[in-house]
Amino acid sequence: MKYVCLILWLTLAMGTLHAQDSTAVRRDTTIAPVTSGADEATDLLTSLTDSAETQPLLPHKMIFTQRVFWGPKGLLRTMKIAPLTPEGRIRELKVRRTMLVAHQIGGFITLAGFVAQGLLGAKLYNAQGQEYVDTKRWHERSATLINVAYGTTLALSLTTPPPVVGAKKGFTSIKLHKYLAIVHLTGMVATNVLAGLIDEHYNLKPYHRAAAYTTFGAYAASIIALTF
Image (tube, rainbow, N blue to C red):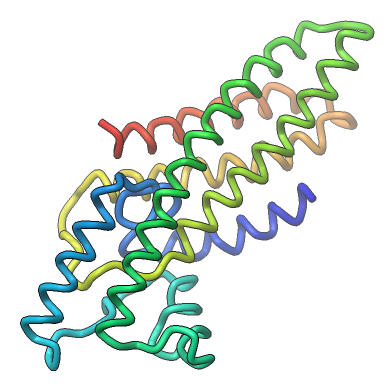
């Protein structure tokens, strides 16, 4: 399960590095306030009503996961599940809003898991005997839950329908969130890889701890960037 998650994250990471509008956990394609989707729906409805013939229905730049599903020749278009029409785009923005709210909830659940995992990890470093065995078991269970929550939250952000045309230019909290997402995604991969090597290479323990703390710090900062 752990290595399946790693392969998924590495694949999604390539899309994250080429993202132009958003990545994991943010207001414009990841962790998003509830008002974001509503504003986008309102903006798109207005623009489509005012210039239905000239207004492009999709942004020019999309992350590759969005293009696979929602692009002009995306899977959902070719299968006739989501025809590319003004009315269809309005419905897609409602779906986008729902997915981003779920993404936001998943982000906070994952953050809580990181806190619990950190406490267990600190206890594990000093535990001995049966206490070490029991703590290690809970630490591994917690890691599995975090991997599932993190992967689900990331997938929600990368597979949402694309936003409206005309994303804001310049440095924004959304872009800060994106850059931090790249850091904590890399940290998640490193933490899991090192966790699988510690039993045979005990000297890697400090690096595992450093990767875990870096991941938590970047993840918490990415949420704070959009929440406050």
